[in-house]
Each structure stands twice: as structure tokens, then as C-alpha cells.
Length: 314
Image (cartoon, rainbow, N blue to C red; front, side, top):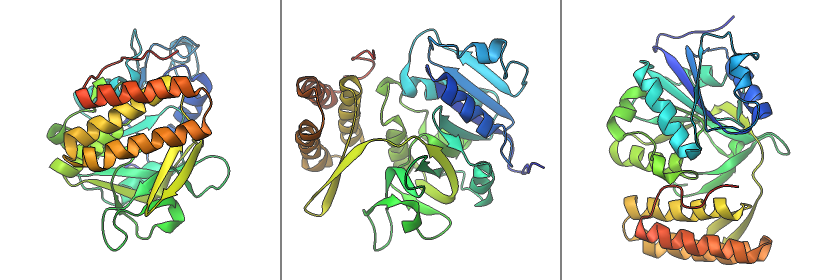
């Protein structure tokens, strides 16, 4: 038996590209929720695999809840979520739940998110946890924003207390918000292409609305992201294993967010942190020349505000 609520129509937005198997897992997870969505919008960023067949002749072709949107080219995760959320708004969805195609929600994830009586002026995020190894480990560390532990970085969900916890940001791996929030703060920045479009949207939510709330009881599983963390004084820096093209966007977009939202913090924190991350990356990742090129280009374009797809994925 499924549980529907009086909160209004709920739409899910999934962005995909060339992840045929993982996308099916994600869709099955959403279609078996205890609180079912009224619509699922799948934005296909020009996949070259068999993704389109799933919706033309395959297992999801006859489901009227699924709206399959195929883009001719790759607009990146940022462009895909921009398109999908705008479409959900056009279709009259009251609440919108966004999901990467490699995420898989627990059967009660949507029900638990709605059960906290979410504030329409805030982003509410499920706990994105790794699907291998320690089942309580976050995919992305959670940074707290209130109380004695303000600015503390947590790596595990069982370090949190309370049903709803304010955090600095959250990834597009199980994020829920109301349409009025988007009307207030705007759609994801499509010109980020990939990386940190979710973080930039969270910064706007803190600046113009009621911020970001993590709901630890709502769980989404996601593949582990390889990273190495270093303690430098009181700060912890994590270096993610990234291909050079993705490293470029990771570097550029971090600096753009600092430039847009945090003033002098760009020079006192973000840029020094980027340079330190560059040195750490050279210590732990191969292909140092390409990694250095990615950092150099990312720093230049981030400081000069050059957005869009400027390094094509392979």
C-alpha cells in the first residue's frame, strides 16, 4: 500500500547520460516508493547507449507517469537539471525531488522527507550514503551551520542528532524543494555544465530563503566517490579522484561560487584552498601534467568568470 499526502503533486527529475543499468535501478527505486510521485521527468543528455529504448519499447514505455525528454547534445548535469526542473514547474508540480541517475532511494525516502513537514522556503535533502563499505558514510561530507558544531565537517550520518539538521549544502542526490522556492531563488545555473551546480543553488537558498535542511532518516544510496582527506591545522581538505576534464569544472565552479556569494572569502579561503588541493592532487593522482592543466585552466576561468562547456568530456 502506498501513502500519498495532502502536500500536492510531487514530481521527480532524473538526469542521465550513458548509464543504462544504473538508470533502471534509480527508476525502479522511485516507482516503488511508499509515497509515489505523480510524475517522473527523465532528462537524457544525448546518451549514446540504449537509454532511449527503455522509454520507446522497453520496460518504462507504457508508464504514463514517465516523461522522457531527450536532448540532442550533452548539456551536463547543470543543464539537465535546469531543463528538468523547469519542465516540472511547467507541469504544475508543487514539490520537486531531484536525483542523479546513479542514486537509488530507500523505499521510504520520499515519505520520510515529506513527514518532516518540509518548509517551502528551504531545500530538504535526503542523506546520500555510500552503497558499499560503511553503510553510514556520506557520499559527500556534511558541513553544519548552527550551534556549537558550526562549520564542523561530518563524514557519517550517525554523527547527526535530530530529525532535521541545517547544513551548508547538499548534492542533487535526493534533494526536495517546493516550486515557490525556485520562483524565489531561480533554477540551477546551467552554465556550470557539471559540478557544484547544486552547491551554488544551495548558496542562493541561504542568501534568499531559509537555507538547506538534511533529513537523516531519508536515505539514498550512491556509489562511493574515491577521495583522500588531509588535515591541515583545524581544516580538513578532501581530494576527489577526478579525470582532468572533470577536475577543470570542479576547480572553476568552486571559485565562481566563492566569487558570487562569499566576497573576500574567495581570496582568503577558496583560492588558497584550491592551490593546496592542487598540491595534494599531484601527490595522490597519476597524470600530473593533465591534472595541473585542469587546475590552471579552472583557476583562470573561475577568476575571470568564463562559464559554459569549455572542456569537452571524452
